[in-house]
Image (cartoon, rainbow, N blue to C red; front, side):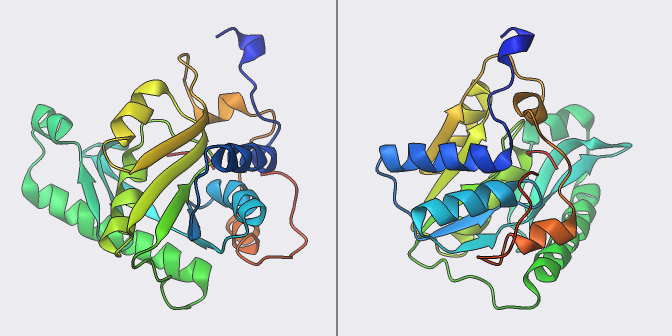
Length: 226
């Protein structure tokens, strides 16, 4: 993809509107939208509003490799649902004690963020429901897998991952986790989610939390995809 062709979306709100339109076109109906904070919340709010669905969140954290926290050897969601990159774990020789310690720590961090964003409200009821997991894009998909697994662990009958942009190889991998994966764009040339947005500023925690309240006077623009 040439550099001038890289920008696909003006901002997260517009990306969410295009995603909602594609979901409607494909006849995909959901019961609840679970957005991934922080950058997934502007997208999730646009999708939830367009489809007339409630919006909540799903939180997961990367489990970094020893000495290289940016390299994901796995990911864990706020309820402890975990994904492990077994091939990388074997390649690096990461032991089980390290992995369990990372799982516990990052699950606690994810739960703290989940509770802080939701102000102590009860967890959303996912039993028997069709859940739309929404983010502003997917890169490797490490934390995305943990988010999908959380939805199933909470009793979801069907999970659809819906994102504005993702590389084809990540879509194929995630199709083995969710019932369906919907991406507006799947460019072959992919370095980072932000390269496909004209406006991709960081979303503060305060701003992100405001998207959870429908009808608030929200900022128009915008953290990166997983």
